[in-house]
Image (cartoon, rainbow, N blue to C red; front, side):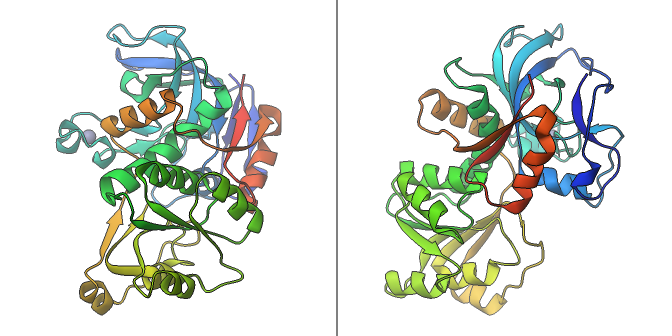
Amino acid sequence: MRALTISSHGGLDRLELRDDVPTPELRRTTDVRVRIRAAALNHLDLFVVQGLPGVTIVPPWPLGADACGTIDAIGTDVTGIAVGDYVVINPGISDRTCDYCRQGEQSLCVQFGILGEHFPGTIAEYVVVPESNVRVIPDTVSPEDAAAFTLATLTAWRMIVTRARVQPGEDVLIWGIGGGVALAALQICRDIGARTWVVSSSDDKLRRATELGATETLNRTKVDVARVVRERTNKRGVDVVVDDVGTATWQQSLLSLGKRGRLVTCGGTSGPIVETDVRRLFWNQWSILGSTMGNDAELDAIIAELRAGRLRPPVDSVFPLTDARAAFERLSTAEQFGKIVIRVS
Ligand SMILES: [Zn+2]
């Protein structure tokens, strides 16, 4: 089959579109095979190309975590999915047997892995996943929207709803508006009835975020974000900060956070090491919350939102598979507003 692969780590020159990747076969009786229609990029894909500590790839390694497609084959014990169904894929793979899985917390699984990172990825003609990792969606959702939806929306849902428990009327600061998780977080907070403070270096992205319902906009190249937040909240600060940038924003996040505030993070695109003054942590009674992907119940919740037309991921651009490297180059510039999609078939 055709797939976008790497065979060694490094820069984007390692990307290789190949026609000779073995088509994956069903491994278990509960597996399904998806013929991919469209895939979407996440920052994770750039990290995989560069190489992640403790993660070993088997060349040629198909990249990609997000995708949608049509069911092409099902195992003998698959009951809820049929050949021909139009589905989105949840890229988080769990063993479904450990204590966390049995509690319904699949993204805490001790064997948790992600398509494209720990398992062959979705920028390929076919992917095999467990039945529990696909959800049927209506034909009215375009392949581009469907491919762009799952990872970012699921991640943001768990961060906002489950971990930070954002309430109506609360103030939520969201860094890097334009990224998929940030845009999903903005829409989820908007629908809850929270006030959103979005940050970007681009006035154009801030304008577009306002159209999506952002309450306050902050251009970090023009203003001191924490100072402006303090001024506009009568020194109180915000209730919640959504920070997936890490090193570059951590201090400003903490300076923006009010007493009893919650900082929720799902990553560190600028760097993983941050510094926190423990005296300010206990005095202000902050909560620092980590979050990764989401569980099956959260997946069902976001699919219900998709079906109802409430949450749709902004799509920045769509590239053909033959031009996948240009898609990765656009992702690496961080100029996108929304998801970058690759049309596979
Ligand atoms: Zn498990």
